[in-house]
Image 1: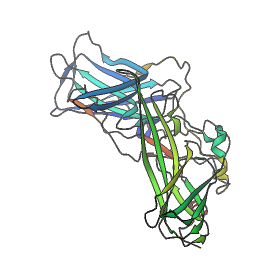
Image 2: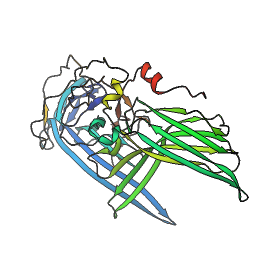
Image 3: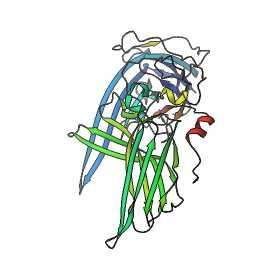
Image 4: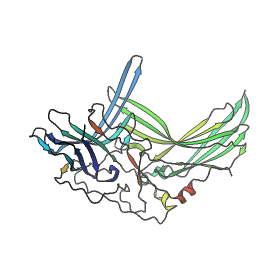
Length: 411
């Protein structure tokens, strides 16, 4: 676009919002020469899409699914059919604000599907290529572990294996798996205790613990079809071989990275579950054994998990946008001035106003990195900023880490 530079800037750091809040910011344009336009058009969309291809011989079927949560199109200046407007060269700023509806699913990005919220600004130029810029913002939909009784339940499981070789018994192994609760948040350490009793002549060479995502995508076109995808997020392992007979417990810690919460509530075409997989490997030609245990990943931690290690933490007040008067309305307001706000609001605090003491989280980019948000049908002239959603990550201090994650050393 030559000397044209466009950007969408949010008043809130990193563009992170809760459902029902007010999204405000500005369209910024730097033109090297005057421009004639019909208007400055802004489109705001919240949607979920899934897409994958299945090949059978020479044929290929593309499966698609889509949900729309809101869509709004408005002009900050001009219109589609009005007279042309000449914009001067230089630095131009056009503020905007948008009221979000309630009941929005959490932002999510994957190569097969996404839940995405975008703003696209178009300088509509008659008989010429439009100047367009597109940016995404993140929705954090609260997933409070304290409202889900199963999150506080401890996990206890048993793994067993009998060994034999050429029809001759070589003994058996029994392992007890213990986890203090079933719900965790990013930044928290999951301490997995493995108590192994090996009454065989076969050595345990490795114990591995991994946090895994289980995704399900639902397509409706050309007909209904589901696709399941599983992947390992993070793992920890103990590599020293176990001798026979009984052993002291081993604790394998997993620190939860920046991840979307379980279930992706309010989305009907993408579902997300987490499991914690314990895998044991053995010497010789004996097959591995593994067991999966369901885990909830939330945005608000169990209160007891902080009380145990930080009982005197004070609450940091949470900034909030004006309350939503009518969730069904989706409105926009433009302002003629070019001034920018003096204070930058902080990211939201998804505690839903609970009075208990909780330290506020930071917001970190999803561990999978940034992706392009440009749709396949959009022009090459669209300036699209690579995007990765940010999720709340809680800072469990060094005392917490030391208490819940002992070193991996045999006693």
